[in-house]
Length: 167
Image (cartoon, rainbow, N blue to C red; front, side, top):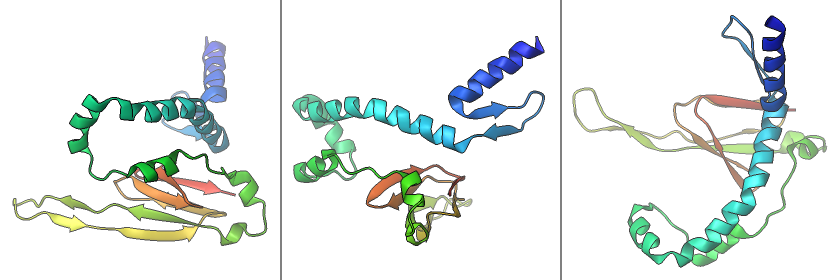
């Protein structure tokens, strides 16, 4: 029985990159396997998302309803720029060049407001932007909100209270 559970956990680890220890709340995470899995899923879904994005302007009824829900849209020219295939950089390749210590990542923290306990005016909190080295550094989002990370003209969402380390 224990062997089959260990075998199941091992096969789950090989698929997901996350190993959960039996009888404990501890887990082991293979960050390379997790990132590769996420990248593979992105590559599989990207063509479908591009088709949907191209087909969306033809659905005028839906666009009329959704138009009021958008906070900030892009003009047709800006949207086309987003569709153009960009040169994708490999973090592994970038980390192996001599310029790697010079690369920086910018974390943009959104402005948000928290209501006060006594029902008064909300307290507006803005964390602004934080620029830190990308490689050989622990990149951390310690806030309770998602942050937008910018690296080499690409934008990523960094989940709340998360971190990563790129060697």
